[in-house]
Length: 98
Image (cartoon, rainbow, N blue to C red; front, side):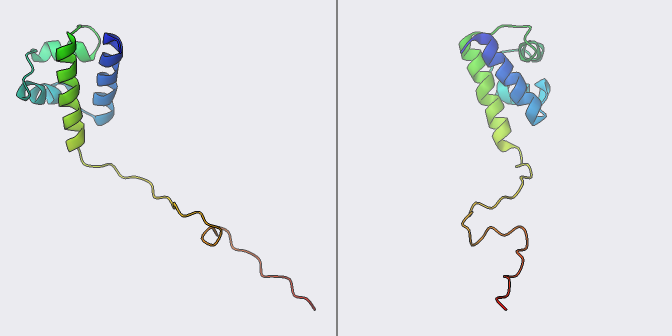
């Protein structure tokens, strides 16, 4: 994985989770991160390169924050698709044999 690929992955994950650089920085710092808030923000926006160890620390902090988010509503689906349970449409009555 390239530096840019890892950086874009972090930006996409933070963006999808609705996390700001400020949200991330506090947790990143608490797990041993050494960047200043502005440096972390610049990294997320692809304007500041980091060594692998710091990129990984950002990823760990970000993933931990994402794991702590409440689950989002999900669509229900039926996973039992046997012929006896699949009847979304009413079936016409059988034709009479008269």
